Image 1 (cartoon, one colour):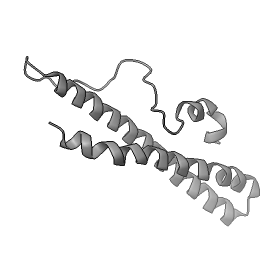
Image 2 (cartoon, helix red, strand yellow):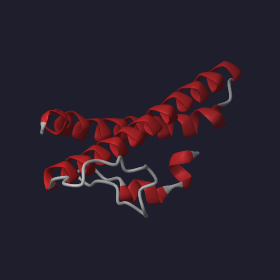
Image 3 (cartoon, helix red, strand yellow):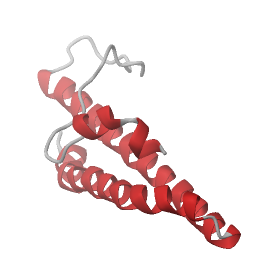
Length: 115
């Protein structure tokens, strides 16, 4: 199951700690005026951090959905061996979603309304 095979993700994405970047950002930088201010660069960096949290949240939501479908199928087929991993991973997936959602709620109003 996903949460058993990827223990490194659990250590990297701990509450209160943002995920570390592992290389150059593949998203293109939007060209702007030559006199771009430091504030604009900080805003761009903050927006990228929000996008990373957004991607993490959506990944956890997808895993939650797959776990729920697996659990329902296991119940319908009366397969206890499939129900156990789904039941084990689902609470952790919900915790990941809550963890990613919290900084999104806190940071997005400040970032999106700054100039």
